[in-house]
Length: 491
Image 1 (cartoon, helix red, strand yellow):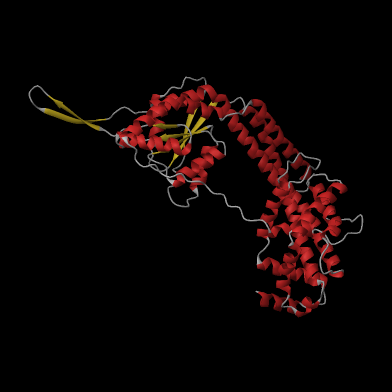
Image 2: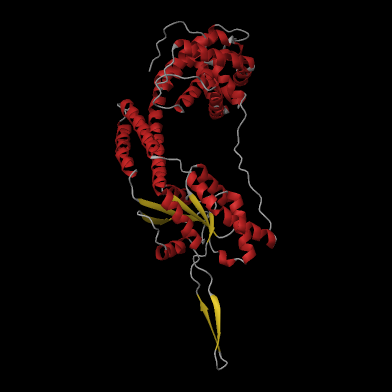
């Protein structure tokens, strides 16, 4: 793709990418709550009473977390269909993408059918030896939910069986595809279990934490564990004993003899079936809609990934064109201090052209405003000097290129213009596909995107290769041997 310039263009694309050097890395932190020590019997008794009084409130909190209605889900499906239609319109020359588009389109009517699905699917998941299979067998034998829908129980493979095992992702994917998750544990949560539950909650999956095998604890210990679980995850928690430990029974006969045998107590799942029954009765339809909503969002994301790939293929040549125009202009007219405000024209033109690729329509005046604001910010932060030093470090050991006064500024202009263009691509890819007109730029969000792009393009090997390419364009008389020698000296 060739960019046709409508007017003279100055050195461009510099200001927008300078923020790459000022953004700090963000690291998510997960607040880990400390373990509770064993409470006194008095506190345990009070805690159990409080749990009993608040059980109805806890259940209502689980139910209230389902704000999904049919209209909202239908809207999400429609948005997914819009993205697929855009994909079909732009994938004319991509045979493989056209086939994928056809498969994606077939899922739209399936999602509408999902809205009226009468079955409810429950996943039973958790670590190894927590009683998943046993609980499913007991529920199938002893539980008849009083709802009109058929309930299916699906066991996943054990989680956390081995450190770093990829099967965890497969098991969680299976669990996430269901309407409700029963997450089993046989004691207080490990750090890995806690983080997994928090992840599921963050992704709006409906779950209940089941403290199974409670009979293996003393009465005060099981109360303490249950209270700790309630405090840690702030969600519905129930205690069960799907397969209680056999107890010894002793009988004294009239003749003085004694008989002893082991007896299997009945499963203790009353609280689980009561709470689960209430949820399925009151929110069964919303659970189905919530699952359909997640599927619609995943379908939209998959279609958008294909669409972004096509658009990136069209956008990359635009960036290539602008980066070398910027390099040539800066090399031919080097100045001691680049005037970012004076280079807003090329920034604006690149915003317009890349916006056209991503159907984010900018007028030239809008693009100039965005370019001017970003350029002013970068100039104020003094990042022009930083960019020149980064390229200068790679160039300075090469006498021929270093003495050419415009070499540093020329290659820097190309490098920074490329980063600016890649950042714009990343930014546009985050916008809604259906938007046909540009709205105000989110500077903070763009800054985060710039940081990400910078981290992907700051490697020494990349800089060396880019400088090599730039010098070949700016100083074609420089030999290949001189370039290789310079790069080895820097490396």
